[in-house]
Structure formats: C-alpha cells, structure tokens
Image: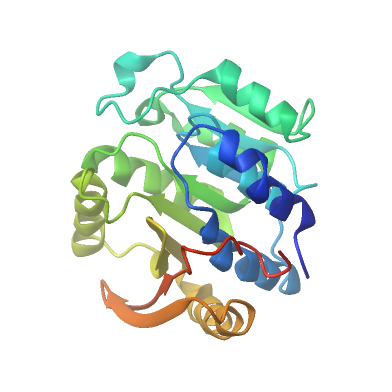
Length: 255
C-alpha cells in the first residue's frame, strides 16, 4: 500500500518548508504505518515543537482522515525557548498546513510551554484527540524538557503507536541523549527504543515493540533494499539502525 499524498509532499512542498527533517525517514514510517493499519491501530498525530511544520505535515498526511492532529509550540513566547532551538512561527505553520490541504478542524494548534501543561490539560487533549498513533518530541532540547515531553508523549500515545525523539544523536543537542539516558537508567518506562534513523530515535510500547521491530526488519529489506540495516542494543532493547540511500530520492516504496 502506498501513501500518494505523502509521496507528493516529500517530492514537492517538503523542500520548501523551513525546518530540519530528512525525507528518507519514510523508509521507516511507511512500513510502520502499514503495520498499524493491518493491526487496527488508528489515531491522529501530535508534535511538541512544530516550528514551520516540515515533519508534522508529513506525519499528518500519513494519517490523513484521523483528526484532530495536535500541534504544540511556544511560537512567539520565546522566553520559554530556553535552548534557542528554532523560533516557531504560527503564521508560517498555518500557511504551510493550508498549502498541504489541511482545513479547519483538522489540526488543533496550541500555543503553550510543554513544561507548564497540567494534568487537566492533558486529559482535555486526550478527550479531544483520542490516543495518538504517532507522536513527535521536538521541543526544547534540554535534558529536563526531553524527559518531560517524552512523558507527555507516553501518556498521550496509544499502545501500538510510535514516538519519535528528534536529535537523539545530534552532537549540538546533547541534552536529548542525556535526558533519555537519565530516564532509562533511573526508571523503567513502558515505551522502549526499537529503531533509529535520520536523526530520530523511534520508541514503541513494550507490548508491541517486538512485533513492530520484526515487521520493520522484513519490510524495510523488501521495500527499500538500497538501505542498510543493522541491529544494535539500546538500553537493553533490540533496536534497528537504518542508513538510507541518501543519494537517492526514493522516500516511499511507490515513489
């Protein structure tokens, strides 16, 4: 099964939207989406730290028809952007959403500091959006924010979903790796790493991680034979490393 709208976005508008994202991520996302569809895992997508929407739009198109998606960013409240990791622009984000074909009611946009979100607000988001099928953590890159935002993602993402943690191995943002290391070495989260590619660590609910990893290993080899995969261990869990063919522009299997 292909994702025509996603393929069109990755070949076109994606390259015009400001931000930092590698389109070859869909070498992983496409087979994971297909696994979710086959296993009845539905739901919209969410992201903390949307910037101008480069990654968010691709995820939302992958789950087109699920609504509402959640976009959370401090936007103009830059006093809460403690590490200066990208200044979000709500007007640019909304313009990019419109250009991608998203209409009123499809995306819930919240201007907020994720560190200040209350339990009541999380319950409100859950009631509005349901459990998310994919959730991206890409807000402030300090260790404290990474832990906080990852906990929010675990709380709001349904079992069978995927959590993406941006800049996990980016040497300019060591707080991301530090935050996850603190979390996994001092706690026992129910979401565990199972894949890494293109600057993002992917985590799954421990009850589903093994099945998702097995599917991913087989599907990537079949759908993207030009990519290189290697199995490693992260925090005691099997994890697939994917190195896509960066010279090519084959982001989805039907492209």
